Length: 105
Image 1 (cartoon, rainbow, N blue to C red):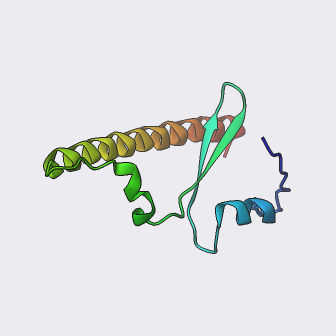
Image 2 (cartoon, one colour; image 1 turned 90 degrees about the vertical axis):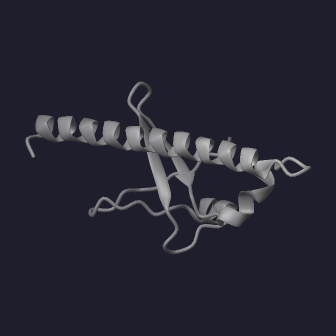
């Protein structure tokens, strides 16, 4: 696994190393998610800059006209992902409020 560093600015901003930007084809305005793991004090970063059309081959659509079933499965997976991201976001917000209280802000 490659390792890269970034230094935080006085405004709390991190500059993404150019090798990382190039690897993930990140451009200005792309969305990047941060997932915080308190247990091992790590952050997982997820680049979300791909088009919805980039993942069409991942749908594994069945042959022979079973589109309704395939669409239903896709929507169920999407619902699970959105629910998980929502729960992670609210858990992060709750942890942040706790951190802010401890810091006295």
